[in-house]
Length: 133
Image (cartoon, rainbow, N blue to C red):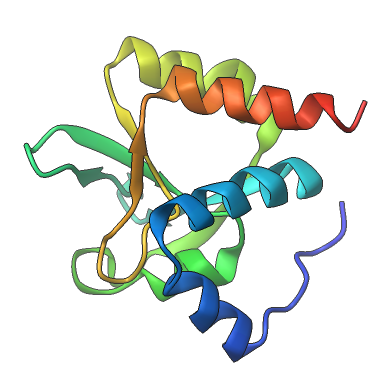
């Protein structure tokens, strides 16, 4: 797999300031295209978030630069970590569904992510990946 392409500051800023649906669509397309996504890890493991009601969520991004932009405050010191999309679909998402952990797709530094259920994200990713077969 090739290393992730470099993002310009303008690209990073434009997408991070885009509305949630646009970021979600970008996440699905880029993740399928690159066959990988990123989470944040620190010394204790993967970082998690919580929705407005306090329910647990697992944040994911389509590029390490977006994840790194969110490595502030509670996530300061964490680093982007790559996840293979096929492993994510086959192993991670079923496990997160079983543990009732939601997905925080493409959060911004102000913690505005698109919240969805793992099985719904699995459907979107599988459908998009099917276009590449």
